[in-house]
Length: 147
Figure (cartoon, rainbow, N blue to C red):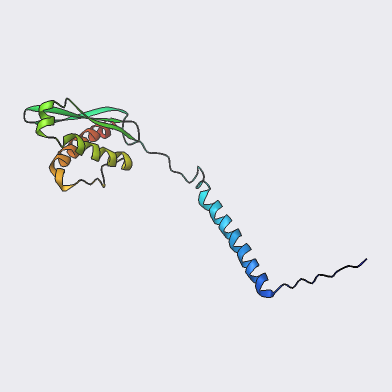
């Protein structure tokens, strides 16, 4: 039998590169594990504070002798719904930006769960300001009911 001897030459540079790539792979796996693990325990989490008394609150706007109610539905810590009640065709015709302005505002309010940081365009500045005031009045009624 003839056995052929194989000689394997491993260069030191290849060993160093392999070691570095293995080390970087391990660090990447550890980083991903720490990024996607749930944060903290129940001890670190603050108890949710009650912002509102759950219910339906409304405030009124008077526009050209027409009364429009802004209805806000809240639970203990979320604003669930904001809509216009008694919006007549006359008001919709005279003020076509009323509903689109409310839709834009409600998207922001639902995302923030507050009225802080709400922005509006210059095109419907005054309509948005009137609607924000009415929403704030309804939310104040919800907050005042706590005491």
